Image (cartoon, rainbow, N blue to C red; front, side):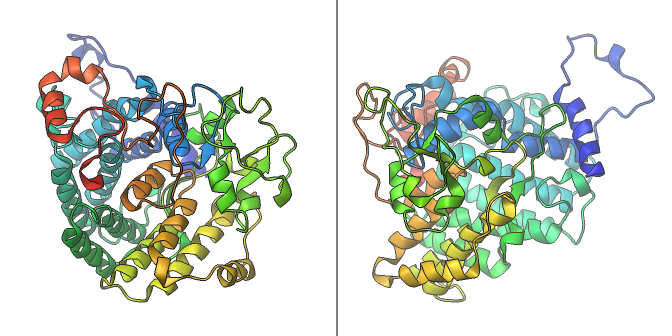
Length: 490
């Protein structure tokens, strides 16, 4: 813990730094100090920025994606996602935070590692983090600045081109393969590695698991490529237990720089309720009482856990306190932010087996393992919650056994349940598979014609500052609106 606090103290210096005016650089250089910050401090900062703060987690993750995917619901008008309203600030939040903060810092670290001749574990770990960050951006927007992004200070590229999503995906898959190959038996990152604490075996497993996730994302767009890369990822070695979950363990301080962004939202906004769609699906699931509580009194009795319909407002529901909210035990600023779970890996392997692709084990075995991992990870990452026992898992699987005739639907629904609070991934997998079957709302004033959005829109500022490249992307991808499908979703 002492090492972690020292790391966060160093991070507070990184995150509070400012840029000086032109002509003052030499006056502010101490000849007795290093002119470049240590990579490990920058790496920890980049991880925290990737996990995100209240701003983007409130807007992109919760207000939009959690309600579009019908995990959460709200009567508040500014919760735009399940009413399909256009809010540029909310839709642009991830872009506005990731490009100047996450991507810029990752590219800076990559340039520094290159200049220092570091082509080993540290570079491999950074490349995996870089793919993860760009995956979030391209999956939510489609064609984006990729190959030239974050190069303003490094190469003077101030108006980066938008790469086609297909090209981005092909490059990211190759990046993951090369990154895993670079990672050795150890790393100098140590406690600055806020995901795996310097465990390079886990980094390799995450890199291969990311390869599997990205490969499966291509099943609609290019099934042959999806199969080839998915089988390569599995052969290389993916996560093997809940001990391999890629997550950031946040803490309550110092100075707020390392708090869980979702937790910060819950401190400021109590409007969210659990969606009726999600709660109805969870009605006989042992996770129900772990994930939810009645808003009015905190009761976790099953009979008290009622979901609120999406698209509701204060007129249709004047008293929303009778509905369930997310359990307080999951709302802390000191709880982990999950990037990628073992449960997802097993469920994607179940889908591979369902499709007849080469993967050790059958669909039923992977499905059951995925369900068990999803249920039991809750007690390990949220220690205040009651752990779900092997007996509870067995009873659930016996009552709802895997049915090969509707295997893909069952696998995809469990993926949706397993990715609560990883709303980016839930939205992605729903668009790819079409499961669970969600009923759209048609709230007055919506901008989608009463259909669930398929992407978020680019910042309007891009039309003014990077107009030619923005225009080329729109011409290639389609209209810049919420219903245009990105490449892998067509």
